[in-house]
Image (cartoon, rainbow, N blue to C red; front, side):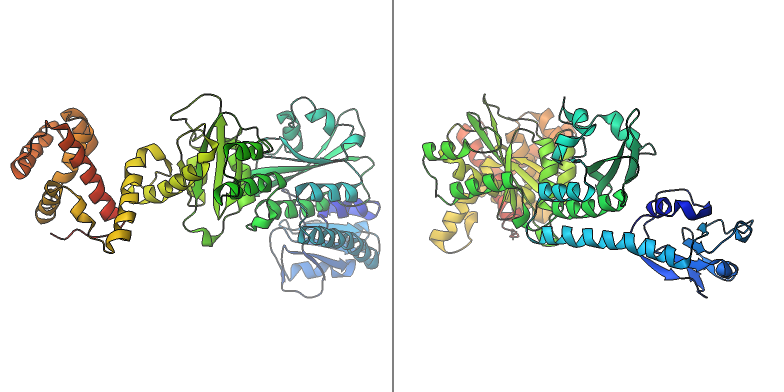
Length: 521
């Protein structure tokens, strides 16, 4: 239904007096004739005549209720109307009130049907913006949460919006502040451009309380014939559903282009470096010499992942990367001119926060110049993100580098091959007996000697670093190492032995956390 603000504009010649509640503009869902209702709610407009005004004294009026009275004179207006309702008194007939509302509502319903039909047939963001401009007969602009232009239509006839975004491709903050002077959470806004006959209508789009888009319509005065607020609401609703869609078929064209390319690489339809480089040359973001793969997976994706919205948010963090969805995972292909071993990709914590929001986890591969190795790198990185979920140090950790888990990937490959050859899970025979002995002792005596040995070897036998890694006092580490040496009777000066013991500690950790097998003394 049209907004109350627009209905007042259409009925302004007949308005005698109004008592409006402060706050955002209302758009009730339906119209109801005022008779003897016991309760007047906020989801509808009530229509009555002057003789119905006494009914207000007998009804419970909820805050925000909207009541319109027809056939009124000045003397019909009560001196002290209910303070919690929006009351309007008109001197026109009841039929005039009803027909005006019905006429405006018919346009809104027609818009809704047209937008629904468009999106049902796969219409994307640009198509929705084009349809909005056609209905508004005015320029329309869609931006992201930072004001950057996503789509536009009718810019050739724009007297204001085109100039606003011409220099930077983004809407200036001062224009947004003029549209929404009451704060960042307001959804609707209007701004009369000084020195012109232009009015800018704005509609913000939110998801889980976070702003992710802004729709703008540039109209000319006198005020448009139809409700621009309602049109913005219709368009914004379908734009939001398009962006938040969990339907992978509704991904944008640039995403689908890289998605097809990635599918061809992983499924070996493209194999040589020449073929792959040629395909990558057509991607939305140019691909440099070195490439790196980021895999984001969602273990509980049955709860639904809004991929369009998620990709839009990830593009804020990975501004120079191609990305797509492959088998339910988000694949990000970063590239750079010089080798980088450990880039900071968290964007000041933004990536971790985004992953936590959808219970996602990200793994980051090593970089390479060999694009023909992308399939292998992807498979290793995909396995890394699975292993790291079981082996991570803290519950809040959601971003993993392959290099930190590469030894576990080696162990994983070894175990998978062992299971294939031996046909059983007796992988403990691959572990050094001394580590088995310490594990058995820990279980029997509720101790952690195996972990102390592991961190002692990992930190090159430095007692101070070992104490920090195990959250123990240095003297406690000394005492535990003394007990360890009494139990295993090995010479830790032997470098090969130290490497074997470290690997065995990692192996049994894999056995317990990834294979989820309990070591039995």
